[in-house]
Length: 265
Ligand SMILES: Nc1ncnc2c1ncn2[C@@H]1O[C@H](COP(=O)(O)OP(=O)(O)OP(=O)(O)O)[C@@H](O)[C@H]1O
Image (tube, rainbow, N blue to C red; front, side, top):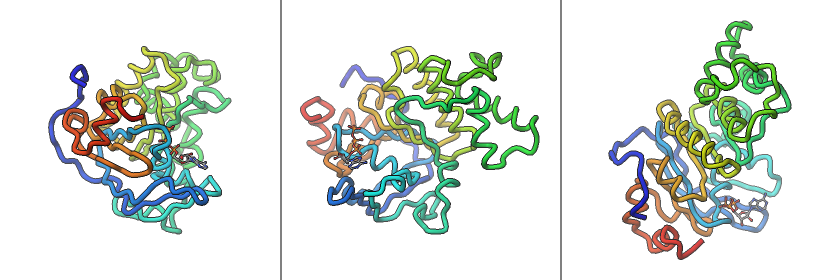
């Protein structure tokens, strides 16, 4: 692990954005997440790592109630966003997902123009009062997605006509267009080539100035490059959570050490 680069060695404590308390997730009889407690900080990139099937994506989906869409899935415990329980029955999941945006493994632009991909969320949430205001929101989101320069002359062309890496940055622009507070990313680079991966990683580093970012990744190099905090999951349990540098260089739990040295997974 000595060849890894870490983004931020400063041990700077940020405010808690999301607090998970005693979270358990079942798919029918299968117990996928076991008593997870964790505090995710604002303006920080947190990486979820661990072997395939350990529950990273399941836990990520708890954070914006995406698991609600899976019939057999039940979630217990509390997940607080700025101290408010997101599973409270007064919370509208659609509003919640505007605040806690998500970017998926495979870029999934809508079959619409580049402009409409980004304008969709702001339109349904009534964020713009005029066409000029909507234009501004779209431009600003595409800039934050680091793709404005590449698409500004073809905003009316289909989003699906872009390269994979451009599509993923468009999806990031779409996610930030509704002014989220948290961005969840489920292996956002796994369908991208190394150049597009580097661009998205650079973008993730910029996004943390404004958002709390949580990224699921299979690549320990990626976790080391982009995150300040790392959570290691194993068999549905959160085994270890701490500063990325500490997790990779001086893990406390033998299971974490076995994973990062390639002995499990
Ligand atoms: N929709 C579902 N229905 C039933 N079981 C599921 C469902 N999604 C996940 N699981 C189960 O929950 C467990 C955790 O899966 P999950 O996808 O969260 O793991 P993961 O760590 O993200 O894996 P990977 O790295 O392979 O994506 C696995 O045993 C998986 O089979």
